[in-house]
Amino acid sequence: MSERTLRGKVAIAGIGETTYYKHGQSPDAEFKLALQAIVNACRDAGVDPRDVDGFASYGGDRSDGPRLAAALGIRELRFSNMHWGGGGGGVAAAVANAGAAVHSGMANCVIAFRSLAQGQFARYGRGNQSAAIGGDDAFLAPYGLMSPAQRFAMKITRFMTEHGIRHEALRAIAMASYHHAQSNPNAVMRGRPLSEEKYDASRWIIEPFHRLFDCCQENDGAGAVLVVPADRARGLRHKPVYLLGAAQGGHHRSAAPVHNAPDYASAHFKTVARNMWEMAKLGPGDCDVVQAYENFTGGVLLSLVEHGFVDPKTANEQLVLDNLLVGGGRMPMNTSGGNLAECYMHGLEMVNEAVRQLRGTAINQVKDAKVVAVLGGPMVTPVSSLVVGTEDTL
Amino acid sequence: MSTRYLPEGLPAPAQEPIAQPYWEGTRANRLVVQKCNGCGKHQWGPEWICHRCHSFDLGWAEVAPRGRIYSWQRPHHPVHPALNGHGPYLIVLVELPEADGIRMVGNLLGDPMQEVTIGAEVEAVFEPHDEATPPYTLVQWRLVK
Image 1 (cartoon, rainbow over the protein chains, first blue to last red):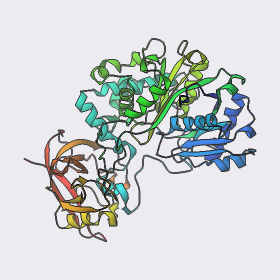
Image 2: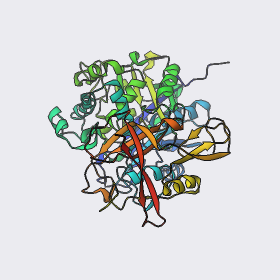
Image 3: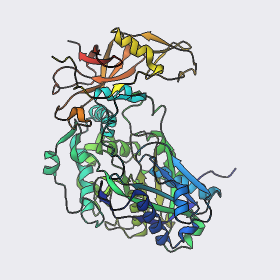
Protein backbone atom coordinates (compact mmCIF):
# COMPACT_ATOMS: atom_id res chain seq x y z
CA MET A 1 0.00 0.00 0.00
CA SER A 2 1.34 3.40 -0.88
CA GLU A 3 2.15 5.84 1.92
CA ARG A 4 -0.77 8.05 2.90
CA THR A 5 0.62 11.54 3.17
CA LEU A 6 0.33 15.11 1.96
CA ARG A 7 4.11 15.56 2.10
CA GLY A 8 5.18 17.34 -1.08
CA LYS A 9 1.87 16.58 -2.79
CA VAL A 10 0.36 20.07 -2.67
CA ALA A 11 1.69 23.60 -2.59
CA ILE A 12 0.70 27.14 -1.78
CA ALA A 13 0.89 29.02 -5.05
CA GLY A 14 -0.55 32.37 -4.03
CA ILE A 15 -1.02 34.53 -0.97
CA GLY A 16 -3.31 37.50 -0.44
CA GLU A 17 -4.24 39.90 2.31
CA THR A 18 -6.08 43.17 2.80
CA THR A 19 -4.96 46.26 4.63
CA TYR A 20 -5.09 45.35 8.31
CA TYR A 21 -7.14 47.58 10.62
CA LYS A 22 -7.77 48.02 14.31
CA HIS A 23 -11.07 46.43 15.26
CA GLY A 24 -14.01 48.40 13.99
CA GLN A 25 -11.84 50.56 11.69
CA SER A 26 -12.34 48.75 8.39
CA PRO A 27 -14.19 50.91 5.85
CA ASP A 28 -15.21 47.69 4.11
CA ALA A 29 -17.66 44.97 5.06
CA GLU A 30 -16.26 41.62 6.21
CA PHE A 31 -17.43 39.83 3.06
CA LYS A 32 -15.74 42.43 0.85
CA LEU A 33 -12.51 41.97 2.82
CA ALA A 34 -12.71 38.22 2.16
CA LEU A 35 -13.19 38.86 -1.55
CA GLN A 36 -10.24 41.26 -1.66
CA ALA A 37 -7.88 38.78 0.02
CA ILE A 38 -9.04 35.96 -2.28
CA VAL A 39 -8.64 38.02 -5.45
CA ASN A 40 -5.19 39.12 -4.23
CA ALA A 41 -4.14 35.50 -3.63
CA CYS A 42 -5.29 34.55 -7.15
CA ARG A 43 -3.47 37.52 -8.72
CA ASP A 44 -0.34 36.63 -6.77
CA ALA A 45 -0.47 33.12 -8.22
CA GLY A 46 -1.47 34.30 -11.71
CA VAL A 47 -4.67 32.27 -11.57
CA ASP A 48 -8.09 33.48 -12.74
CA PRO A 49 -10.36 33.65 -9.65
CA ARG A 50 -13.04 31.89 -11.75
CA ASP A 51 -10.77 28.81 -11.77
CA VAL A 52 -10.94 28.46 -7.98
CA ASP A 53 -13.19 25.51 -7.21
CA GLY A 54 -13.13 25.29 -3.44
CA PHE A 55 -13.01 27.19 -0.14
CA ALA A 56 -11.82 26.10 3.30
CA SER A 57 -12.06 28.15 6.46
CA TYR A 58 -12.33 27.86 10.25
CA GLY A 59 -13.46 29.63 13.39
CA GLY A 60 -17.03 29.87 12.10
CA ASP A 61 -16.07 32.31 9.34
CA ARG A 62 -19.19 34.17 8.23
CA SER A 63 -18.08 34.51 4.57
CA ASP A 64 -19.36 31.16 3.40
CA GLY A 65 -17.97 29.31 0.40
CA PRO A 66 -21.08 29.08 -1.77
CA ARG A 67 -21.71 32.81 -1.37
CA LEU A 68 -18.10 33.59 -2.26
CA ALA A 69 -18.37 31.30 -5.29
CA ALA A 70 -21.45 33.16 -6.48
CA ALA A 71 -19.92 36.60 -5.93
CA LEU A 72 -16.75 35.66 -7.79
CA GLY A 73 -18.59 33.99 -10.66
CA ILE A 74 -16.79 30.72 -10.03
CA ARG A 75 -17.54 28.20 -12.75
CA GLU A 76 -18.03 25.16 -10.54
CA LEU A 77 -17.79 24.73 -6.75
CA ARG A 78 -16.30 21.33 -5.86
CA PHE A 79 -15.22 21.75 -2.23
CA SER A 80 -16.63 23.86 0.60
CA ASN A 81 -15.35 23.17 4.07
CA MET A 82 -15.62 24.63 7.57
CA HIS A 83 -13.37 23.35 10.32
CA TRP A 84 -14.99 23.03 13.78
CA GLY A 85 -13.72 25.04 16.73
CA GLY A 86 -13.30 28.66 17.66
CA GLY A 87 -10.64 31.25 17.01
CA GLY A 88 -7.52 30.27 15.12
CA GLY A 89 -7.28 26.66 16.25
CA GLY A 90 -8.16 25.66 12.70
CA VAL A 91 -5.82 27.89 10.70
CA ALA A 92 -3.43 25.11 9.67
CA ALA A 93 -6.32 22.68 9.36
CA ALA A 94 -8.01 24.90 6.77
CA VAL A 95 -4.83 24.90 4.65
CA ALA A 96 -4.48 21.14 5.13
CA ASN A 97 -8.14 20.53 4.27
CA ALA A 98 -7.64 22.52 1.06
CA GLY A 99 -4.56 20.38 0.42
CA ALA A 100 -6.40 17.13 1.08
CA ALA A 101 -9.13 18.22 -1.33
CA VAL A 102 -6.77 18.94 -4.21
CA HIS A 103 -4.59 15.89 -3.55
CA SER A 104 -7.58 13.54 -3.47
CA GLY A 105 -8.95 14.92 -6.71
CA MET A 106 -12.08 16.34 -5.11
CA ALA A 107 -11.01 19.80 -6.27
CA ASN A 108 -8.21 21.44 -8.24
CA CYS A 109 -7.64 24.87 -6.83
CA VAL A 110 -8.79 25.69 -3.30
CA ILE A 111 -8.65 28.90 -1.27
CA ALA A 112 -8.04 28.69 2.50
CA PHE A 113 -8.95 31.99 4.11
CA ARG A 114 -10.10 33.98 7.14
CA SER A 115 -12.05 37.23 7.20
CA LEU A 116 -12.94 39.34 10.23
CA ALA A 117 -14.61 42.71 10.70
CA GLN A 118 -15.37 43.15 14.34
CA GLY A 119 -16.80 46.59 13.88
CA GLN A 120 -19.52 44.99 11.83
CA PHE A 121 -19.91 42.05 14.20
CA ALA A 122 -19.35 41.27 17.89
CA ARG A 123 -15.99 41.36 19.64
CA TYR A 124 -14.38 38.35 21.27
CA GLY A 125 -13.17 39.84 24.54
CA ARG A 126 -16.64 40.64 25.87
CA GLY A 127 -18.63 38.21 27.94
CA ASN A 128 -22.06 36.92 27.08
CA GLN A 129 -24.68 39.56 27.95
CA SER A 130 -27.72 37.31 28.26
CA ALA A 131 -29.60 36.95 31.55
CA ALA A 132 -29.36 33.15 31.80
CA ILE A 133 -26.71 30.94 30.31
CA GLY A 134 -26.65 27.21 29.54
CA GLY A 135 -24.22 24.45 28.62
CA ASP A 136 -20.69 24.61 30.03
CA ASP A 137 -21.06 28.33 30.64
CA ALA A 138 -23.72 27.70 33.31
CA PHE A 139 -20.85 26.44 35.47
CA LEU A 140 -18.43 29.23 34.52
CA ALA A 141 -20.07 32.57 33.69
CA PRO A 142 -21.83 33.11 37.08
CA TYR A 143 -18.30 33.06 38.59
CA GLY A 144 -17.08 35.76 36.20
CA LEU A 145 -15.28 33.33 33.87
CA MET A 146 -16.37 34.47 30.42
CA SER A 147 -13.62 35.70 28.08
CA PRO A 148 -11.15 33.67 26.02
CA ALA A 149 -8.29 34.94 28.22
CA GLN A 150 -10.10 33.63 31.30
CA ARG A 151 -10.88 30.29 29.67
CA PHE A 152 -7.16 29.62 29.17
CA ALA A 153 -5.53 31.45 32.08
CA MET A 154 -5.65 28.56 34.54
CA LYS A 155 -3.85 26.23 32.11
CA ILE A 156 -1.04 28.75 31.99
CA THR A 157 -0.99 29.33 35.77
CA ARG A 158 -0.66 25.62 36.40
CA PHE A 159 1.99 24.93 33.76
CA MET A 160 4.20 27.88 34.63
CA THR A 161 3.91 27.30 38.37
CA GLU A 162 4.70 23.61 37.95
CA HIS A 163 7.80 24.31 35.85
CA GLY A 164 9.00 27.48 37.51
CA ILE A 165 8.80 29.52 34.29
CA ARG A 166 9.01 33.28 34.85
CA HIS A 167 6.76 35.93 33.34
CA GLU A 168 9.86 37.38 31.60
CA ALA A 169 9.73 34.41 29.19
CA LEU A 170 6.31 35.59 28.04
CA ARG A 171 7.57 39.17 27.82
CA ALA A 172 10.20 38.04 25.31
CA ILE A 173 7.50 36.41 23.16
CA ALA A 174 5.47 39.64 23.10
CA MET A 175 8.52 41.79 22.40
CA ALA A 176 9.65 39.61 19.48
CA SER A 177 6.33 40.16 17.71
CA TYR A 178 6.39 43.91 18.35
CA HIS A 179 10.03 44.13 17.25
CA HIS A 180 9.37 42.45 13.90
CA ALA A 181 6.22 44.54 13.31
CA GLN A 182 8.21 47.79 13.37
CA SER A 183 9.55 47.21 9.84
CA ASN A 184 6.29 45.82 8.41
CA PRO A 185 4.25 48.56 6.68
CA ASN A 186 1.02 46.53 7.00
CA ALA A 187 1.48 45.86 10.73
CA VAL A 188 -1.17 47.48 12.90
CA MET A 189 1.40 48.08 15.67
CA ARG A 190 4.07 49.60 13.42
CA GLY A 191 5.35 52.75 15.07
CA ARG A 192 4.42 51.47 18.52
CA PRO A 193 7.48 49.55 19.75
CA LEU A 194 7.36 47.61 22.99
CA SER A 195 10.08 47.96 25.62
CA GLU A 196 10.58 45.94 28.79
CA GLU A 197 9.54 48.98 30.80
CA LYS A 198 6.35 49.52 28.79
CA TYR A 199 5.46 45.84 29.15
CA ASP A 200 6.16 45.76 32.89
CA ALA A 201 4.11 48.91 33.44
CA SER A 202 1.12 47.64 31.45
CA ARG A 203 -2.04 46.85 33.35
CA TRP A 204 -3.08 43.43 34.51
CA ILE A 205 -5.76 41.72 32.48
CA ILE A 206 -5.47 38.60 34.63
CA GLU A 207 -2.90 37.73 37.27
CA PRO A 208 -0.55 35.97 37.46
CA PHE A 209 0.55 35.85 33.79
CA HIS A 210 -1.58 38.14 31.60
CA ARG A 211 -0.54 41.75 31.32
CA LEU A 212 -2.09 43.83 28.52
CA PHE A 213 0.75 42.97 26.12
CA ASP A 214 0.36 39.23 26.71
CA CYS A 215 -3.03 39.44 25.00
CA CYS A 216 -3.76 39.67 21.28
CA GLN A 217 -5.51 42.58 19.65
CA GLU A 218 -8.78 42.27 17.83
CA ASN A 219 -8.57 43.38 14.21
CA ASP A 220 -10.39 43.76 10.91
CA GLY A 221 -9.09 42.35 7.65
CA ALA A 222 -8.74 39.15 5.65
CA GLY A 223 -6.05 36.77 4.47
CA ALA A 224 -6.08 33.95 1.92
CA VAL A 225 -3.82 31.32 0.35
CA LEU A 226 -4.31 29.41 -2.89
CA VAL A 227 -3.59 25.68 -2.68
CA VAL A 228 -2.99 23.56 -5.80
CA PRO A 229 -1.42 20.18 -6.62
CA ALA A 230 2.39 20.32 -6.49
CA ASP A 231 2.77 19.65 -10.23
CA ARG A 232 0.56 22.56 -11.12
CA ALA A 233 2.37 24.87 -8.69
CA ARG A 234 5.65 24.25 -10.53
CA GLY A 235 4.14 25.81 -13.66
CA LEU A 236 2.95 28.95 -11.90
CA ARG A 237 4.60 32.30 -11.23
CA HIS A 238 6.25 31.77 -7.84
CA LYS A 239 8.59 29.24 -6.29
CA PRO A 240 6.13 26.66 -4.86
CA VAL A 241 5.83 26.41 -1.10
CA TYR A 242 5.19 22.74 -0.38
CA LEU A 243 3.09 21.39 2.43
CA LEU A 244 5.40 18.93 4.20
CA GLY A 245 3.25 18.00 7.17
CA ALA A 246 -0.05 18.98 8.75
CA ALA A 247 -2.21 17.69 11.56
CA GLN A 248 -5.25 18.72 13.56
CA GLY A 249 -7.25 17.51 16.52
CA GLY A 250 -6.55 17.20 20.22
CA HIS A 251 -5.35 14.70 22.81
CA HIS A 252 -7.60 12.44 24.91
CA ARG A 253 -10.65 14.43 26.07
CA SER A 254 -9.01 17.78 25.48
CA ALA A 255 -12.52 19.20 25.05
CA ALA A 256 -13.86 17.71 28.31
CA PRO A 257 -16.51 20.00 29.85
CA VAL A 258 -15.95 22.51 32.67
CA HIS A 259 -12.12 22.38 32.63
CA ASN A 260 -12.01 18.59 33.14
CA ALA A 261 -9.48 17.62 30.45
CA PRO A 262 -7.26 15.01 32.14
CA ASP A 263 -4.09 16.61 30.76
CA TYR A 264 -5.22 20.13 31.59
CA ALA A 265 -2.15 22.39 31.52
CA SER A 266 -1.74 21.97 27.78
CA ALA A 267 -2.14 23.78 24.47
CA HIS A 268 -3.67 20.50 23.13
CA PHE A 269 -0.84 19.90 20.62
CA LYS A 270 0.72 16.80 22.15
CA THR A 271 -0.66 14.31 19.65
CA VAL A 272 -1.11 16.88 16.86
CA ALA A 273 2.56 17.91 16.88
CA ARG A 274 3.68 14.28 16.85
CA ASN A 275 1.47 13.54 13.83
CA MET A 276 2.63 16.66 12.00
CA TRP A 277 6.35 15.91 12.45
CA GLU A 278 5.74 12.30 11.46
CA MET A 279 4.18 13.31 8.16
CA ALA A 280 6.86 15.92 7.53
CA LYS A 281 9.68 13.48 8.42
CA LEU A 282 11.18 16.47 10.20
CA GLY A 283 11.53 17.79 13.72
CA PRO A 284 11.74 21.17 15.42
CA GLY A 285 15.51 21.27 14.86
CA ASP A 286 14.96 21.32 11.08
CA CYS A 287 12.93 24.55 11.10
CA ASP A 288 14.52 27.86 10.13
CA VAL A 289 11.57 29.99 11.26
CA VAL A 290 8.56 29.49 13.55
CA GLN A 291 5.23 31.27 13.31
CA ALA A 292 3.49 30.57 16.62
CA TYR A 293 -0.07 31.86 17.00
CA GLU A 294 -0.43 34.22 19.92
CA ASN A 295 -3.88 34.48 21.40
CA PHE A 296 -2.05 34.86 24.70
CA THR A 297 1.71 34.59 25.22
CA GLY A 298 1.30 31.76 27.73
CA GLY A 299 -0.30 29.70 24.98
CA VAL A 300 2.72 30.31 22.77
CA LEU A 301 4.94 28.89 25.50
CA LEU A 302 2.78 25.76 25.77
CA SER A 303 2.64 25.43 22.00
CA LEU A 304 6.43 25.75 21.60
CA VAL A 305 6.96 23.16 24.34
CA GLU A 306 4.52 20.68 22.83
CA HIS A 307 6.07 20.99 19.36
CA GLY A 308 9.51 20.37 20.85
CA PHE A 309 10.93 23.85 20.23
CA VAL A 310 11.34 24.67 23.91
CA ASP A 311 12.22 22.47 26.88
CA PRO A 312 10.29 23.53 30.00
CA LYS A 313 13.48 23.03 32.02
CA THR A 314 15.36 25.65 30.01
CA ALA A 315 12.44 27.86 28.93
CA ASN A 316 13.65 30.80 31.02
CA GLU A 317 16.99 30.79 29.16
CA GLN A 318 15.58 29.97 25.69
CA LEU A 319 12.79 32.52 25.69
CA VAL A 320 14.84 35.70 25.68
CA LEU A 321 14.32 38.41 23.06
CA ASP A 322 17.65 38.07 21.18
CA ASN A 323 17.00 34.39 20.63
CA LEU A 324 13.68 35.06 18.88
CA LEU A 325 14.74 37.76 16.41
CA VAL A 326 15.64 37.61 12.74
CA GLY A 327 19.36 38.24 12.32
CA GLY A 328 20.99 36.47 15.23
CA GLY A 329 18.26 34.57 17.04
CA ARG A 330 18.47 30.79 17.09
CA MET A 331 14.68 30.52 16.80
CA PRO A 332 13.36 33.51 14.80
CA MET A 333 9.69 33.72 15.59
CA ASN A 334 6.64 35.64 14.36
CA THR A 335 8.76 37.46 11.82
CA SER A 336 6.04 39.76 10.46
CA GLY A 337 4.71 40.73 13.88
CA GLY A 338 2.30 37.87 14.47
CA ASN A 339 -1.16 38.16 15.91
CA LEU A 340 0.06 40.55 18.59
CA ALA A 341 1.55 43.24 16.40
CA GLU A 342 0.96 42.59 12.68
CA CYS A 343 -2.71 41.66 12.79
CA TYR A 344 -4.96 39.27 14.63
CA MET A 345 -6.15 37.58 11.45
CA HIS A 346 -6.54 34.30 13.35
CA GLY A 347 -3.14 33.13 12.15
CA LEU A 348 -3.80 33.30 8.41
CA GLU A 349 -1.30 36.18 8.29
CA MET A 350 1.27 33.73 9.69
CA VAL A 351 0.73 31.30 6.81
CA ASN A 352 1.29 34.19 4.39
CA GLU A 353 4.48 35.11 6.24
CA ALA A 354 5.71 31.50 6.13
CA VAL A 355 5.28 31.61 2.34
CA ARG A 356 7.18 34.91 2.04
CA GLN A 357 10.03 33.49 4.14
CA LEU A 358 10.34 30.50 1.78
CA ARG A 359 10.11 32.67 -1.34
CA GLY A 360 12.81 34.89 0.14
CA THR A 361 10.59 37.98 0.00
CA ALA A 362 9.88 38.60 3.70
CA ILE A 363 10.54 42.03 5.16
CA ASN A 364 12.44 40.46 8.04
CA GLN A 365 13.96 37.71 5.93
CA VAL A 366 15.67 34.75 7.58
CA LYS A 367 18.61 33.95 5.32
CA ASP A 368 18.08 30.84 3.14
CA ALA A 369 14.96 29.75 5.00
CA LYS A 370 13.92 26.31 3.77
CA VAL A 371 11.51 25.04 6.42
CA VAL A 372 8.91 27.02 8.36
CA ALA A 373 6.47 25.73 10.97
CA VAL A 374 3.12 27.41 11.58
CA LEU A 375 1.61 26.53 14.95
CA GLY A 376 -2.10 27.37 14.99
CA GLY A 377 -4.17 28.80 17.83
CA PRO A 378 -3.26 27.04 21.10
CA MET A 379 -5.49 25.91 24.01
CA VAL A 380 -8.72 25.81 22.00
CA THR A 381 -9.82 22.48 20.62
CA PRO A 382 -9.35 21.20 18.01
CA VAL A 383 -5.95 22.74 17.28
CA SER A 384 -3.81 22.40 14.15
CA SER A 385 -0.32 23.03 12.87
CA LEU A 386 1.64 22.65 9.65
CA VAL A 387 5.13 22.75 8.29
CA VAL A 388 6.03 24.00 4.80
CA GLY A 389 9.26 23.88 2.82
CA THR A 390 11.01 24.77 -0.42
CA GLU A 391 11.76 22.41 -3.33
CA ASP A 392 15.08 21.50 -1.62
CA THR A 393 13.23 19.86 1.24
CA LEU A 394 11.33 17.31 -0.87
CA MET B 1 -25.11 43.53 53.43
CA SER B 2 -24.56 41.39 50.39
CA THR B 3 -23.47 37.81 50.92
CA ARG B 4 -22.53 37.49 47.28
CA TYR B 5 -18.94 37.27 46.12
CA LEU B 6 -19.55 39.03 42.78
CA PRO B 7 -21.92 41.92 42.01
CA GLU B 8 -25.48 41.43 40.78
CA GLY B 9 -26.08 41.24 37.06
CA LEU B 10 -23.86 38.42 35.86
CA PRO B 11 -25.67 35.72 33.85
CA ALA B 12 -27.62 33.22 35.95
CA PRO B 13 -27.16 29.50 35.26
CA ALA B 14 -29.95 28.22 32.99
CA GLN B 15 -30.39 25.08 35.19
CA GLU B 16 -30.90 22.82 32.19
CA PRO B 17 -32.57 19.39 32.61
CA ILE B 18 -29.30 17.48 32.11
CA ALA B 19 -27.94 19.13 35.29
CA GLN B 20 -31.15 19.30 37.34
CA PRO B 21 -30.00 17.03 40.23
CA TYR B 22 -26.91 19.21 40.65
CA TRP B 23 -28.95 22.42 40.88
CA GLU B 24 -31.51 20.81 43.22
CA GLY B 25 -28.63 19.61 45.40
CA THR B 26 -27.08 23.05 45.71
CA ARG B 27 -30.40 24.49 46.87
CA ALA B 28 -30.20 22.02 49.80
CA ASN B 29 -26.50 22.80 50.44
CA ARG B 30 -25.42 19.47 49.03
CA LEU B 31 -22.88 18.80 46.30
CA VAL B 32 -24.42 16.28 43.91
CA VAL B 33 -22.63 15.20 40.72
CA GLN B 34 -23.05 12.66 37.95
CA LYS B 35 -22.04 9.08 38.80
CA CYS B 36 -22.20 6.24 36.31
CA ASN B 37 -24.46 3.33 37.29
CA GLY B 38 -22.42 1.15 34.90
CA CYS B 39 -18.88 1.59 36.21
CA GLY B 40 -19.43 3.57 39.39
CA LYS B 41 -17.18 6.50 38.41
CA HIS B 42 -17.98 10.19 38.80
CA GLN B 43 -17.84 12.61 35.88
CA TRP B 44 -18.26 16.36 35.49
CA GLY B 45 -19.75 18.39 33.78
CA PRO B 46 -22.95 16.54 33.12
CA GLU B 47 -22.95 14.37 29.97
CA TRP B 48 -25.34 12.03 28.17
CA ILE B 49 -22.96 9.07 28.24
CA CYS B 50 -20.21 7.78 30.52
CA HIS B 51 -16.93 8.54 28.80
CA ARG B 52 -15.34 5.49 30.43
CA CYS B 53 -17.82 2.60 29.89
CA HIS B 54 -20.32 4.17 27.45
CA SER B 55 -23.29 3.45 29.70
CA PHE B 56 -26.26 5.76 29.19
CA ASP B 57 -27.45 4.85 32.69
CA LEU B 58 -26.02 7.83 34.54
CA GLY B 59 -27.02 8.39 38.14
CA TRP B 60 -26.23 11.12 40.65
CA ALA B 61 -24.45 10.98 43.99
CA GLU B 62 -23.67 13.36 46.81
CA VAL B 63 -19.95 13.92 47.23
CA ALA B 64 -17.91 15.45 50.03
CA PRO B 65 -17.80 19.23 49.48
CA ARG B 66 -14.02 19.33 49.82
CA GLY B 67 -11.23 19.64 47.33
CA ARG B 68 -7.81 21.04 46.43
CA ILE B 69 -6.96 24.06 44.33
CA TYR B 70 -5.80 22.72 40.96
CA SER B 71 -5.24 26.14 39.39
CA TRP B 72 -6.36 29.75 39.77
CA GLN B 73 -6.58 33.20 38.19
CA ARG B 74 -7.21 36.75 39.38
CA PRO B 75 -9.03 38.69 36.62
CA HIS B 76 -8.68 42.47 36.74
CA HIS B 77 -10.21 43.48 33.40
CA PRO B 78 -14.03 43.58 33.57
CA VAL B 79 -15.48 41.32 30.89
CA HIS B 80 -19.12 42.11 31.70
CA PRO B 81 -20.89 45.40 32.53
CA ALA B 82 -21.78 44.01 35.99
CA LEU B 83 -18.06 43.87 36.80
CA ASN B 84 -17.24 47.46 35.78
CA GLY B 85 -15.51 49.18 38.69
CA HIS B 86 -15.60 46.04 40.84
CA GLY B 87 -11.88 45.32 40.88
CA PRO B 88 -9.99 42.04 40.88
CA TYR B 89 -11.56 38.75 41.99
CA LEU B 90 -10.38 35.18 42.32
CA ILE B 91 -11.45 32.18 40.26
CA VAL B 92 -10.24 28.73 41.30
CA LEU B 93 -10.32 25.35 39.62
CA VAL B 94 -10.95 22.82 42.38
CA GLU B 95 -10.16 19.12 42.12
CA LEU B 96 -12.30 16.72 44.18
CA PRO B 97 -10.09 13.78 45.21
CA GLU B 98 -13.06 11.99 46.77
CA ALA B 99 -14.98 12.06 43.48
CA ASP B 100 -12.45 10.55 41.04
CA GLY B 101 -10.65 13.87 40.69
CA ILE B 102 -13.44 15.73 38.88
CA ARG B 103 -12.91 19.49 38.76
CA MET B 104 -15.21 22.45 39.38
CA VAL B 105 -14.86 26.18 38.82
CA GLY B 106 -15.83 28.71 41.48
CA ASN B 107 -14.64 31.81 43.29
CA LEU B 108 -12.23 31.67 46.22
CA LEU B 109 -13.84 33.60 49.07
CA GLY B 110 -11.91 36.07 51.19
CA ASP B 111 -9.42 38.78 50.27
CA PRO B 112 -9.26 38.94 46.46
CA MET B 113 -5.58 39.90 46.72
CA GLN B 114 -4.63 36.93 48.90
CA GLU B 115 -1.80 34.68 47.82
CA VAL B 116 -3.17 31.48 46.27
CA THR B 117 -1.37 28.15 46.42
CA ILE B 118 -1.99 25.26 44.07
CA GLY B 119 -2.78 22.20 46.19
CA ALA B 120 -4.34 24.15 49.07
CA GLU B 121 -7.37 22.47 50.67
CA VAL B 122 -10.74 24.12 50.21
CA GLU B 123 -14.33 23.46 51.19
CA ALA B 124 -17.56 24.40 49.44
CA VAL B 125 -19.68 27.37 50.55
CA PHE B 126 -23.20 27.51 49.13
CA GLU B 127 -24.19 30.96 47.89
CA PRO B 128 -27.99 31.27 47.50
CA HIS B 129 -29.60 33.62 45.00
CA ASP B 130 -33.12 33.34 46.42
CA GLU B 131 -34.62 36.36 44.69
CA ALA B 132 -33.72 35.10 41.20
CA THR B 133 -36.45 33.63 39.01
CA PRO B 134 -36.02 30.73 39.31
CA PRO B 135 -33.82 30.82 42.42
CA TYR B 136 -30.42 29.14 42.25
CA THR B 137 -27.40 28.50 44.45
CA LEU B 138 -23.76 28.81 43.39
CA VAL B 139 -20.97 26.70 44.83
CA GLN B 140 -18.09 28.84 46.12
CA TRP B 141 -14.90 27.76 47.89
CA ARG B 142 -12.95 28.85 50.93
CA LEU B 143 -9.64 27.74 52.34
CA VAL B 144 -9.76 25.10 55.07
CA LYS B 145 -8.00 26.66 58.05
